[in-house]
Image 1 (cartoon, rainbow, N blue to C red):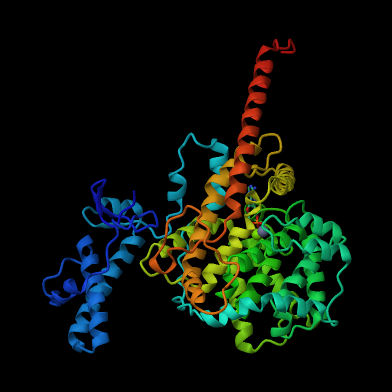
Image 2 (cartoon, protein in one colour; image 1 turned 135 degrees about the horizontal axis):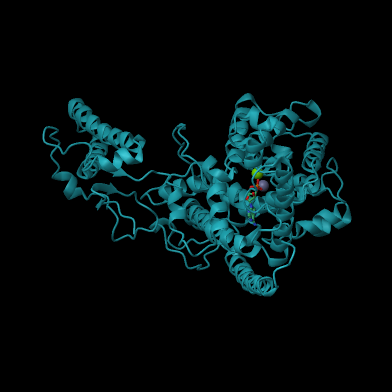
Length: 561
Ligand code: CMP
Ligand code: MG
Ligand code: ZN
């Protein structure tokens, strides 16, 4: 179990960060008034800054300083000295983080802080015999990478404009009909209208939309969503410009004829993002511009995908890998190409945004799409978990929207079996085509790409257990954390922020403010059903392999040699 306390490990003191698994009883409580009252602000006799005790002392002092500042009862000198001490403690943590692991282990008894985003950690918790080595190798090579070093600007505190949001939710339905009936808007075929009636459902059938729309699901779904959320009206998007933009995006998704990364996948992810926005109440927490950026990010997130992975781009030395220096190669391309498209005035959705709105929109889309790079997965989850484990988490809008998009991007294993199965077969087709290319180029097979040697069922069980389930878990925790306060304040107002509900779903309460707030989690049952089916399939496959091996062994050797 992870604790926020010192534990000896290999001759060094190890401080392991707080995590959400920590129980309330274990938590380092906010100091009481009595504790603060008895605090001595002397800075002469403090523990060394790189000791565990220093952390507690610094935290306590910061709390005290905050209280005294509020009361206006503190001298500048005391404030300065204590802040200096706290800064040094934090710097000691940072310095220790940056030391190589070996140096850290040898420097007993110095502090060893576990890296904030120690992604390998997640995989090291996977029992060695729980997954086949191929699957493990695939998980490690696809979903981990070196810790990013770039520091971001500190997160903006989210603002809860509960009443306004509640009212906005109330008029949402009304807005849908007003916009849809507007004559200036694109005409939808009857079949498309019929399929779109189920747009708000978790297991929406995007394949049916593809059929009904004559192969243009992005055009209709993209249009419908931007219209439903009032974006066309709010950001004065000329309807023909939107239509042109969506047509060109759809074309880009079809450019390489990929079995999986095509216009259907874009539409699927956009619809799933819509579910998260409207069915959890997330739309009430985001501004119009943030909703606009999130929907557009979902639509363009794999634009002009080549049907090959980042690893393939790097290993084959593609032009795109050269352009983006082997980092988030595809994701950089999706974003860059989509913004390039918007330079064409006929496709420029953003033509009526102010300069500030454009900058904010662009930053949001870039952040969200870059975060769909799977090598960022463990880091992203870990960062969010650490944040949610704090007593008063402040979740940044861009981080929240990025996690939502990432989860929606990998959500098909959490949909109904027929949908999930179809997606999996398409993805494997795509992986195998890449394997064929690798073979032709004399490159080693990427994991899951060798059509003659891939454990399909096992890989899917691994993907569900180690990637999708934890992602959906963190995503739900985050939603409950950020929407809880919004929900409790809207309950007190005249309008209720539908469709938030209080179904009990078995996860732990986060804080008093949101103790009763739970979102619906239709993915939980789907994940469990799908995993069960894959497990049955895996058992059958193993049996077939054993039988095949037996047959091979019983065949007498040929006399050719
Ligand atoms: P992309 O859509 O770019 O981002 C998410 C990635 O997750 C996706 O590409 C695939 O590489 C990977 N992915 C999605 N579904 C599965 C699956 N069922 N099995 C293995 N990998 C998957
Ligand atoms: Mg992608
Ligand atoms: Zn995708």
